[in-house]
Length: 291
Ligand code: NAD
Image (cartoon, rainbow, N blue to C red; front, side):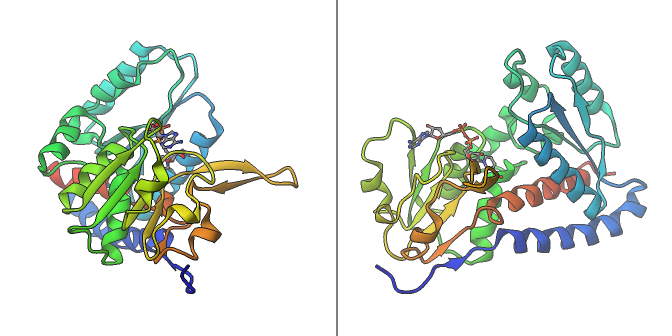
């Protein structure tokens, strides 16, 4: 077992650095373009976790000079009404980015709604056109959370070429796009999921372990190779003995930090990076709109 504590990969600090840079960009471009960049975050219903994420995103927008066109719809809104709202935002020239806060209530078809967003305004990178561009290795808007993981690895100059990486979780939001992004950086990637057999034997071979599952304590120290880099995407609310809640990831942080070379904390790791990349994507589509 390693004697040294792992280095903390500080997503909060990098997110702040990115937001400082974006703030300067918007300050320079807003007078030239004649309007600030605009982002519309759409929320349906009253999921408390979603409400926190939406508030964080809108607060971050105002800090860097992005105008918010967010809308909060009642839980019983119809598919048609939401599609009409998205169609209006697609045409609205003040809006560069549209994001649907997931998950949506059961009666709504989220795939159809995501597909109705103008791909040029798809700042969450979930439209088939943008996912297709990712598969092909072409430029395009990339999903915020996996792009945030990649930006954090780049900041700490983690060399991925030829390395063994394992991504645990195969969602379209995180695991699948992240596996493709790691491949694009020449890592050799294993994509594990709920039906994977003998996960520990796979994680133990990996130089880079990414957990994106949503299960506290999934990654234990004996599953991690000494000197590996561990990225914890999971966000789980667990209750404390005092009857409160705290946020933890999928990695048993304290014990894994004794084995790993570097590790992301939760909170303060990939969460803030996701927001920073969302803002970056919004400004990317603002500058690409050629106005
Ligand atoms: P999801 O529920 O869509 O997918 C979970 C994945 O985990 C599935 O692919 C499933 O096959 C896999 N899985 C389930 N049990 C497993 C097991 N025992 N072993 C291996 N794999 C298993 O979730 P998601 O949307 O991809 O999110 C994953 C986690 O990341 C959640 O905790 C979520 O809150 C968090 N998240 C964080 C951010 C962020 O900004 N940090 C953003 C998105 C999601």
